[in-house]
Length: 106
Length: 117
Image 1 (spheres, helix red, strand yellow):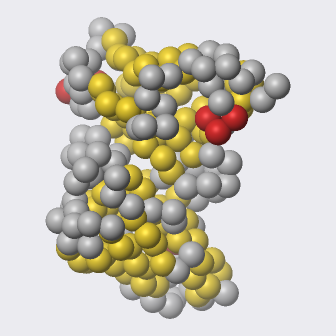
Image 2: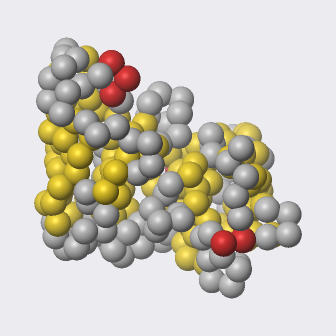
């Protein structure tokens, strides 16, 4: 099983700041990695797939990068609605998720 | 409207059974692989099972293999998850989801399963 490790567990930032979230895979997943956003009481929402492609309707302030084992989700300038939990997920070998990074208001 | 709606959750005793359902609307259900993903209270996401578009191939996470069965009815646009021999660690919100681009791009709102005596 491919294990995804996200860091940090919690990120405390203010609106307007830049958020950088990391996801590391236990073995190469090529570019088969996605990022999801989840708000309390809601289902996850696909933000980024294939490491760097934005899903339909996702604002340009969200961007993804990386390949192999190291990936990054960047939110260029945090909006109030961006405070949530973010998960990475790989589809290289079945499907596994990281444990999540909570982006909270500082 | 494109949507997935789950039902069937509730309280079940350890060792018991429960059947979850998911109804799809607004898209060509028979063209997509379908999945169940679960989330224990306050925890992260765990992929549970998938079925291919015509229902001929299924895959399960090791944690549920031999206990859960996924199935679909393309004529009724429904996806099911039969849960047998449930355990306390199966307590979670269960989401159905599509993987149109090989990722989970459409999710339902989930149904809560609580395993407790």
